[in-house]
Image (cartoon, rainbow, N blue to C red; front, side, top):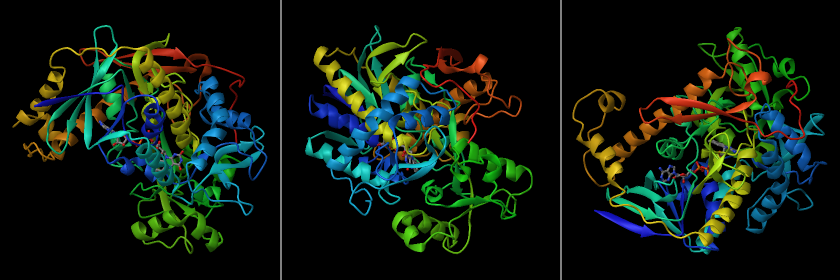
Length: 543
Ligand SMILES: Cc1cc2nc3c(=O)[nH]c(=O)nc-3n(C[C@H](O)[C@H](O)[C@H](O)COP(=O)(O)OP(=O)(O)OC[C@H]3O[C@@H](n4cnc5c(N)ncnc54)[C@H](O)[C@@H]3O)c2cc1C
């Protein structure tokens, strides 16, 4: 049985990006949010360290310095007009969260407090600057709760534990709606809508050691990819330097922002050699690579010599208690290490997808080198590529990306809804999804499902999580295919993308964005489009 619903706009994803878009939309049109998790369980709630804006509350700062840092941090693969826009709108976006009740940490005189984070500097690299606004090390949790309350207030209709499995586009490429699977019943639902906003988050689960939650399987990018939309800069995947050794559970960069340092097995503060000016607060790609280098040269610790250490034992316990309570607890619980007394074993952990569904600064999905707009289709948050993060995202710029571009996408989608008639879907638009699911359920032998997911036994309709995990595995494989294809072609090193056979950045040939398309026969075609430049001329990245 298939149920059909009709809305003006459907948002797929109840994390920070989706909720921020939904707030904007719901004031002007009938809006539904679909989420495979309960919205407040989205990964945004796990974000720890902060959300940045050049408020200048603690030290002098300016949006322009923030834009410079973002472009340099992204190793010049950032679209500069988008970065300038984001850093300019950041200030108002933070005050709006404050007005909605977000409990930020405060300065003694009552203003929003700010702390240091990697790659954020004063006056184009002079010294680290305090730019990250925060609520202890639970900033994402507070943002998610704040945005969710605003959605409830506006009567946004939520469909929880609904998995979007297909995007409906008509022959002219116009967005018609989506198909979703209801976990509780096993039923398929058709959602008709004039505008669809994808906000499904990242796909870090393709890696063994990752900071990402289980649900981060790249559903949005894979669903649209299968419907002809290219994916941008997928080879740019960030490894965060300080995951708990072997587990990948994140210890926020806020630890280093508050004065923590990384040490090798000889007790040396090695970042002084790699980034003499800002040391441990160098961007993540550089710190992760430095750790890799230390380990490779035999200065790693632990039984296999494959980790280094994060040391916060010299910090004032009161500061740790007030500003880093969760992550110190993680070290105690998961590694049985007391961070106030000894260094914590860490290693880089797969963390953040810079690439994703290509959009403009209004969240509209764009295809090809000419950036043709796909009518009615939007993407925001980690599943999207605006591109403000380029080849390497700076810490605290993602939560900012959600609120700035979530608002902009919601705003533009509401405009689009007002100006557009509802398109009529064809008969049985759910048919390809049924075939996909029946194909998985009908399999009794054979290599794929059997080999890849060893326990595919559940054939029931209700709460068939095995079925959904198999579908998600397919999404991860698609994202991984696109990532590898882009990485093999890009014969240079830039930001998070590092190749030992091509160790240098090559602006003459590679200052361009990758677009990976899935062809009908399953092969991948790669195209490129220019990076949008601006005031910042690429230079060697030194810190
Ligand atoms: C441990 C950790 C700490 C972090 N700390 C920071 C930080 O301090 N500062 C910072 O700026 N960034 C931080 N980040 C990054 C940042 O939190 C994320 O990039 C951001 O929150 C992603 O938000 P989102 O709205 O795009 O997606 P998410 O919050 O991941 O939400 C995705 C939503 O999509 C839904 N969904 C997915 N697939 C489907 C589907 N098929 N059908 C229906 N719904 C679907 C899910 O249910 C969920 O609601 C951190 C990330 C991690 C993992």
